[in-house]
Length: 119
Length: 278
Image (cartoon, rainbow over all chains, first blue to last red; front, side, top):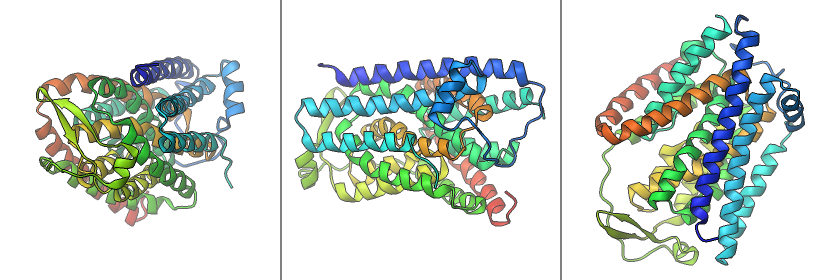
């Protein structure tokens, strides 16, 4: 895999475009369904049910517009994770052990963050 | 206000945030969060969540350009990112325990610092003959192509840079911003790396830092779809437009104007935070 940095760049672009499209589509449907509702975003209420990965995937598969928007954000996070893993792979191929381990650590931290449950 | 107007206005503001962010190199979060909170009275947590997501998007979008130019130093990036990730995780977890006033005051302080850092003239880098031992061990030194030749650079003070990056990550997690200004500072001033390389490398890792905080923000309910939608679309389109303008505009004057603007915004948000009006 000679041009891994470029591959990383292309993966990022694709991931961002996919996320953009999914968020856009979800958003348009959301506007269509709720456009005339009144905004209630002035105080923080932790009643957003789209904040775990299983919930988001379920909502996505049910064509829920909110689910689609959240799914777009998940894809963005996933794109970063792919970036880290590809970079780790690059270091592994070049036998750069410490950088490889550091990159793996970052990858694991990302996974931990996604699986995080509030205390 | 109805949702459709709200979405439209947020989209326009986000577009400008993305535009300005792309031109000045200072991330959209610095402009976006105060705009959302002060102008539209969106709760600061939702604003932070939306800003974080947009940081990931713009970082990824620009990355391919910098990678192609060959300015990005992936080694330095991942080395420093280790610290940033630790900071970001800690910062993101801490947010839920902090009051809104405290966040606002911290935000104001960061705005002032960013205004100062942006308005400074970039000095030419002195050429070093030696590198920090860590830089040698991890092969962080490199060169970049500019002015028709290969310019070599040697990395200094690696541990200090790592510390600053950890703080940068913590700020990113605490405030939902990219904290690119501090990242560039760590590379540019501490490691003595050429500015172009610093900017490109910072852009490369900023998205990763944001992603680490994003998971925690998601679990805490800060990522709210009605806010995410217009912000993400607006910032991404604005950043694309900004990249076009960047070729043509005199970015130095824009940066000065921008520094002044965020200084004023900093005053406003600091005031609101201190008087508990947030």
